Length: 231
Image: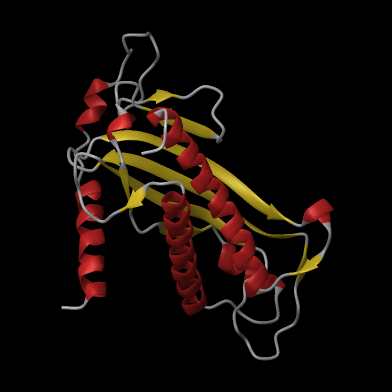
């Protein structure tokens, strides 16, 4: 059996574990000991968060997590994205194009998060253990302004933004499967000072890498603050 197959099985095992979590936390909703209102899954909203919205389990001890498992991200385009693209461009965006883009985005996201986490001193693993935090990401409302459909003779697309995306991320204890936090944030990749630029697959990927890097840095900052110091 190849190492790639083993890797995919390990990631899938973690993914299935998270998907199969029971929703017993809904029974815990109400008021916390500090008086903060709890969500249906027993989390408390983080005030003055650096992202659009964030929720955390105030009883969770994040200092125990020394390693991180990043699940393969779910990727979804914004509603009617394909229809709108095909109305405004010469070359048509096909279902195959969309599947390729989603795969490329997921791969790039995982690579950026892994590289940033490892550079910050956090080991990225594919196993469940007491010191492993599971990160379950989803990239939703993906809106690429000028996608590269690899159509021969296609016209150039000039835009002031290569696109936007919303990150919905959940944090889980890898052993118990309990949700410990979740956050949502939307980012738009804009050209400096609104300058019109030629959008290509290279520029789109560079912009996506910058957005994913900012999200990864926010996660690292959160982990660092709860550790007090890096592991």
